[in-house]
Length: 419
Image (tube, rainbow, N blue to C red; front, side, top):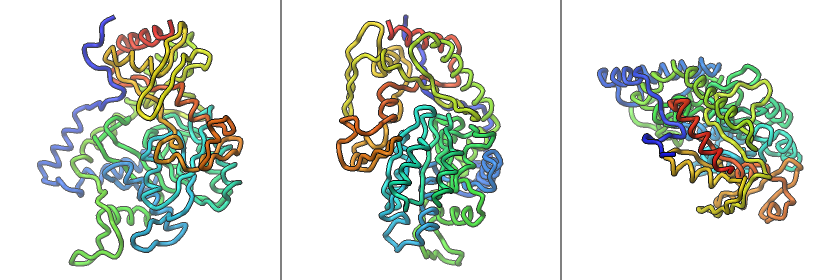
């Protein structure tokens, strides 16, 4: 079998032409800064699609999450002194199996992430582990929850737990735009929520994101904070720290041109997921789980290999090795084989409690066990579902421009790894 002539991407931008129309409109009208019609339209469309009252267009989803953390901290603990974060010294319960951008903003505001293990049935934050976490730390008042790969978990249960304990919820819906739980849009569940238009997301602006809220005061304050917190004065006057976080009107033109194609992209991603599932039906693997009463956006198709069919694999912080065994494989072998054929996959998110910068942070498992600055998880005394999924899982090429013929070849390549 020959390598693909053209690289098969994990998830690349899919452009339609409307994007150039609105970018050109910004150019012709000379609205090339962080104000303009495209920004206004993106905020209107984003709020309507997410079923919230207000959206604030920002330069990326991380900045939206940062402002979410700042809002939550000030609401919970009051406005901090200049030079201090709104979450200074406070524990915050965070999703563990996610990208670092989910919780780095907690640290920007001085908070201390406490990682909540992953639910095997959804690959998202485990509600049981979260309840156990509140039993250990009843004074915690903020939860940061990320929806993984466009396949939502039990955010309805997460909300119930937060309400029970008087905690606020930040919903990181960066990967889940267009997905639903109980027929309600992801991005509408959090007290503060964020979505992403990064280059590989379900729709893109090359960059960009939105903060979503039902509170007009929050929306107006987010616009102020994101434009250096300038006061309404005839000169440049500042009473608090601000940020350069506003979305460009040019980038907004791309996002504006993408939104009409969101449902089309979701349909294409769903077809890819279902084709993989059919192609792997007799293999010892499981695809992303779909929780009852949820509708994924199918952004990235992923798989985990059954434990009994894993060959020996070891990883350190930057390398991976494996020993090939007949009838078995591992993520490292599959990813290296895909790369050999000019196709892109990637590992499942490495859990945050295993990241070098967060290894001393607390991690709470489903059984209520606590790994706090110890090696407890190494000797098996702490349940660690996220680590298990990371060890056995990988993300598959999920580009919505991939033809069925190309995907069939990807399936054949992966099947060959089990021989």
